[in-house]
Length: 300
Image (tube, rainbow, N blue to C red; front, side, top):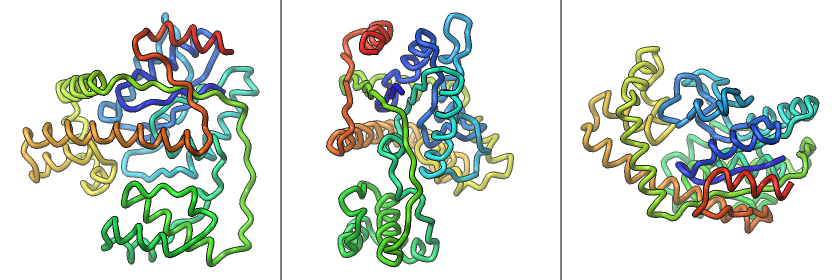
């Protein structure tokens, strides 16, 4: 299995599609928002990238749920493992491509803690606490998950507490076993100034190409504003604009800032993956996707 990761606007999809065209590959998307139908512009699905020399590259885990539904890392693991078997049976090469580090790491290292169920009562009790208070609470609950937990955001810290609490109350829990093929991970990490330029350019292109209208259609379908806000970034701020909470100029300013921060958090998580034992070969940023493809094929 080939794995291609990188922050937003780094060129992952184009590289994955061109590589798949060369080696007979199928792409598995590792993106927590591209699973939703009707959320195309804001999630940057770039479906046109999957057409190379007139041939559509097979792709998976894109447009599999209706917007408004929930999807989580355990569901992703189960779906990806099932698709990996199918790709293998067809004699093709799986190419895992995306920027959701949590999904990537959970699959590559077959994390078992993702199967621990949601505890809504506990989540409601934790919701009023600040991120600092949540982190302190997590440190008070030592478990087998302590060294693996990601507590970089409130949402992830709440989940970490949920897992640690479950493990303490269910010490005899037996986890399901899973395995993935041998893999090589390649990373794209353009210089920060180039990344920022691409992010800003892409944001303005999305606005011009109908992002506001896309969110309005979702609202018109009856999807609650709070559900769209849950998806974050473009859907959060554009929804707040459409319901009258933010001005259009404020939306642009906030999105510029938050998407840049998001890319930085992605890189922080990829560095965590390296510390956790996942080797990433970072491809040279001063070359072309064609050269990247040559490098990967040479390695193969």
